[in-house]
Length: 250
Image (cartoon, rainbow, N blue to C red; front, side):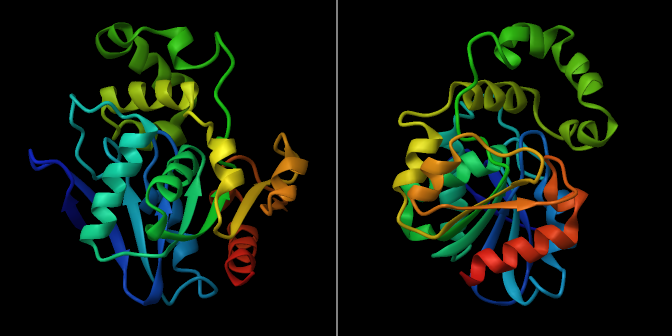
């Protein structure tokens, strides 16, 4: 395990690192998850192995610190991740990012373009949620932190997701989810369309993302992975590895 201080108070982002050749690959998890848990098996698959790989836990998640005073906006996540990557000597990385992590990866590429040479987005969140949907519609922050909100959420998501969600700071979970629901300005989708780097969007074969035509017209490769739900790398590791390797060769 390695880490980098990302705030003056000593707050640290941590990751599990695999040695190998450049360019570095950076793996980013989704909301309430942890990159080593979700990506270790695929990152060490012979088809993807051999590159330096950082399986990073974003601020508030997994093995990283959980400051209660952080905003946990997507922009803050991206900026503090940029600090960690710079400290680790990373530049022009191939970023492979799942769900909420994909949103952070898009913002990272837009705000810190020297750090990203390619994006592989794994069923990433591209759009704000409609009004009345998501964690903000269920709970206030006070209800989530000091009422039943967090416990009810852990029950609702089921044991597999709860296993990593329990490692996420309560403030980090609520605020990250709330800001993910609000989205960014421009939206994550709009930022993605304008990025100059190679971009691939992986999705479950039975759940095509919205706006495919606009994505492909902007040069985003949209790839269906069979026999998988939202957690493609866990549901169909071989399919994920094949699609990711093809994306990074393109």
